Length: 245
Image 1 (cartoon, rainbow, N blue to C red):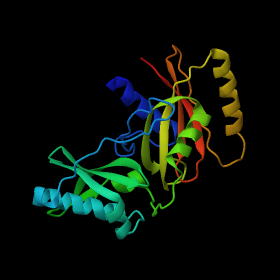
Image 2: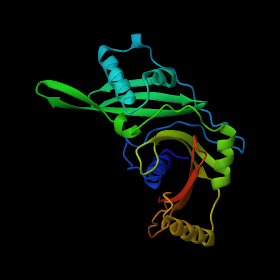
Image 3: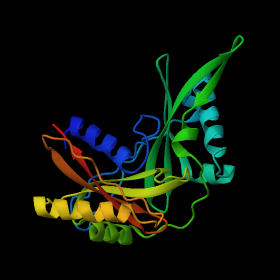
């Protein structure tokens, strides 16, 4: 998939699953494509910088980001065990700290965009990670990878472009660990219309489950079926979006 289409796909995904599509909110997660029925969905390893490699300014960014993440709800011991520093960028117009969150073989990359405000002569940093993650908790149990793949396939058929994300995926601000993928299955017009009516009907029921369907614009485009499997509960949420040229 080309770079431009990938960006469009990720923005549509954020809108589809109920989160404002902005850079701090749409958490990046790097996951290799599920290219076969038995894809292992593994991440490319990254080399973390050591504390000795960081400047005092970079160390300050890392310490502030770590504090901001812990304040979302997880314990310090959980952070130490499951979060790994990947990268620090400390430029005038681009200050970011990138972390890798790992649990039970799943990995999600999370960016903390660092801004600031002034208070007198002091410059106080602000960390977007607090809004990105919302409320967190010490996740311990997750479903097996093989089960997650099976659920995704049952939900949207054969799929590709699978990746893991850790962020809120509902009306609530509780961060969830999700496997997200794009269906490879094409839909005929009749199937498309029938599915649209079914989802619209479900969305009107008082089930507490959020069903989302895109509003298609005239002129058409590539229709994308997207599935998101909650890696704690095993529940799959399915939706659709249109990517225009």
